[in-house]
Length: 459
Image (cartoon, rainbow, N blue to C red; front, top):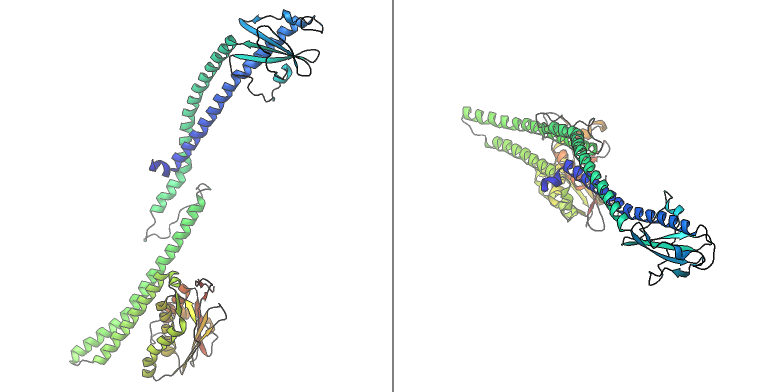
């Protein structure tokens, strides 16, 4: 049963079978309704023939004067019953084989013969009554127990229904074979597309599901799958590039460390400060790679961590970097607005701020200025980090945020600091960019918060 629900061909086949059964039920109901229509029409023809033959030469007047007493009591082996109604609809006479007058039944022979006339059942019982309109406007109701006619009509309709059923079964067999062929023909492109999709793998990421032969109803699904494959291919390509770049960046400090160790072994001297420096550089690069990998994995979920104090995070981050500034004999000025809060992941915010400030320390000159301000009510926060260096040309500023991109090849750093900051900020719904060319200022834009405390993207 589960496979039946999952199969598109089975669903279509079941729907067609249900439609066929509904059509057959409608036909059977129509034939059953035809029996009473035939009974009524036959009785109406007989009644008109009887009345016209008996009353053709009679005039108007009482029932006896009009010849109603001469109406036959039997016709075709069945007993007849009569009731006369005046033009006003009042019963004026009924035959002596009735206990009371029969109910008035309106209608004429001409109305019964109209092809588009809607007629309700005139009775499904043993006795059927029909109206005959007289010359003076009166109505004579003629009724009979039409057992013979009913039996004949039933036998005829059963024969017709049996023939229709046999024809319907043959039709269903032929239709089933035709529908099965049509389903296979219709779903063949889907099966072919599924086979092609199964051949997509990391070694052949460029393959896509062809859309030209698919049914229109399947094309949106296939197009969405192709778009998803495009994104996966791009992510795979970026990952391969990232791994290649990471391996290249790691090779340099490892090679330098290896050469230093070999030199120390040959000379018999241990230069521990140099070894420690290379290990620290290697550790710093690995930490940045892990941070970047964590940011890539976080995606847009980091903004759901909760409300944090940006003012306190900036103070703590700057305090942790003060020894580095003292070691490099550089000054740092801090101008922070208090009580600035954002909805973010505190660790991601700390990573972004630390990398931008370290970038200004390693690649800038002079005093590093850090300024935090609120960007209006509900408008997020802005953190500017600037220095007194030469700055970055406008046409090269966006490239500085690419991974492993360095302003000067062979210079200090790994080229990951600004990339980590941008990825972290964009995960939070904010962004980071340069402001002008000189002085060199990097602006971190943190997302605004809505009334319910959720982050609002600034893009």
